[in-house]
Length: 175
Ligand code: HEM
Ligand code: HEM
Image 1 (tube, helix red, strand yellow):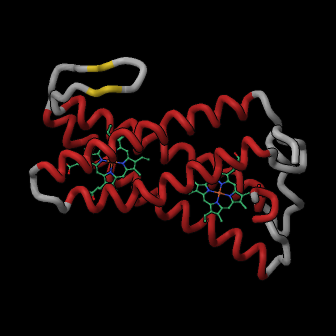
Image 2 (cartoon, protein in one colour):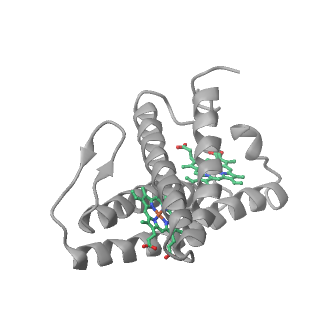
């Protein structure tokens, strides 16, 4: 298996990026919902720190993934089974990237506008507090999480439909 993508196949680096992001999200989303139900205390502080570190790691992984995409061809999608199929698949991929960015950036802005200092790994950031904006970014954090859940469900449904209806095993391309 080659490291880089070709016009028809994903290489090892893209595959690792894909499954690393997926695994991190499968931990991070339930962790977020678990976090909000916790009472204030030591446990909540620890879980929130893990949530922030994992969330920021997901942000940097997605950033690295997109930079890598710039220098490496994206394998072409197979022929349309119905009109607009390739467009819908592309749109789903773009929206998945966009949703993850919106979630991570809104999470960071929520904490920053709460007046908290944030360690962004390469530098620390602190801005003047604004609790109204913190509230708005938290709403965006929640809404974009529900959007991501819908997009992931569509993404997985498409793979299942391809397998059973179109007899095309897309999973083989990314495994
Ligand atoms: C892809 C990455 C992330 C995912 C999937 C995610 C997911 C979630 C979810 C599902 C919740 C629960 C929302 C609710 O129902 O109220 C949540 C809460 C929260 N998230 Fe994230 N998050 C991510 C990244 C981040 C980042 C990068 C930060 C901060 C730097 C952050 C800060 C928070 C905070 C502070 C809460 C709890 C707010 C509160 O209860 O006061 N998240 N997150
Ligand atoms: C069990 C879960 C998942 C399965 C079975 C799955 C399956 C696949 C498959 C088969 C492809 C290749 C499609 C093609 O032939 O071009 C793909 C690509 C992709 N997947 Fe997933 N996926 C999963 C989870 C996720 C998650 C959680 C995300 C969230 C970010 C995601 C984002 C993407 C993106 C952005 C691409 C396109 C890659 C590119 O060309 O940039 N996937 N996925």
